[in-house]
Length: 472
Image 1 (tube, rainbow, N blue to C red):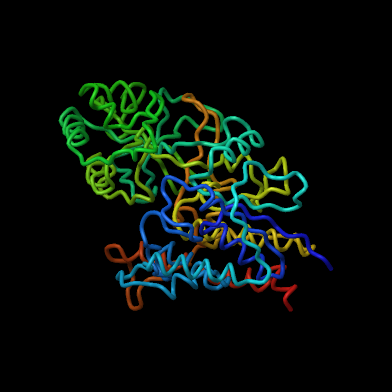
Image 2 (tube, helix red, strand yellow):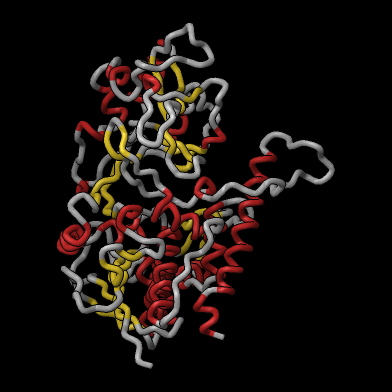
């Protein structure tokens, strides 16, 4: 049987991984990479899978770290990116860091040597209507021409060009003896209860100390090619503070319409609100707290807020250029564009962040496209796995309800345990010989249980997948 080739656009980590998975499944691939015909502001070479920022794939701990679990799942699935990363690793403690030149060269060599992959060095400004299967993996620096084409296919507001990111925390790390649930003026919005926000109160002394820390905090700068995308709807919190010490009290930290459930007789001088960020209710974001503060400064300053002293941050804030889709609205559960199913998206353009996350979404897109090319049914990995949890966030886990301040914007995310479904009762095991947990033992045990479940379920998914059955 003759199989039509799948066209993969972009030779980064996601595109390279998608191409490899397709070819290894016996499906021919045409991989289009625009470098060196057209360069980007960030890339320095024409190598495939070039690492343009850090050389770290982050934690390799598969027992209690979500990124490490993702590493393990990639290895189980025969990932090219992980295989090349493992071969070219450099010392980095518990992290997997790689020799970036050796890593890129290894990925390039493997792709170029595969008999089912044709590498074309060319810039595409649009995608042919008669291509039966396409994976777009052009990353955060999608070329302007192709970006315009994608926007025309998906809608004017579907492709963001700047990330305005507020910090996100694990709900179970908040101190609810200081914070409380309440919507401003107890307003019940669509799907709401009148208690939709976590509120953290500050008195005058705490507020003034917080503003002073914001102003003094170490900040990053925009890269020259990013420009400065400030507009009043997404000003960094520290830029608002520069406009006057009282500005935040009349903006994102206004105390009006809120009553401290723990001390109703004392009116808060200012209030920081956190809003549920995912459908599971495990993650909350700090409303209006997009920032250019450096990460170390953010964690220190934001833990000055009552209720956040022990906050565990899933991600910290930022504001930078990053092209990505409004994926929960546009993509189906197997990463196809709902209005044009022959077109898939993979990697950072879908709204994931990080090298291994990008490679993972590429791996899933490649396997989904391969299954369809072989006349099989594409089945997503379970939500309990790291890949399934990441896919769930991209294609439907984010809350997009209309609110008083407008529709919530979908924001990219690294993999983290907050994206995983809760554990079943009894899954968390106490240390042998102990009747109760001590210190942070319960947190560690929870992560270990989530890791065990993820890897078991991922192995089962691989063994029962359509591609595994076809190989037999």
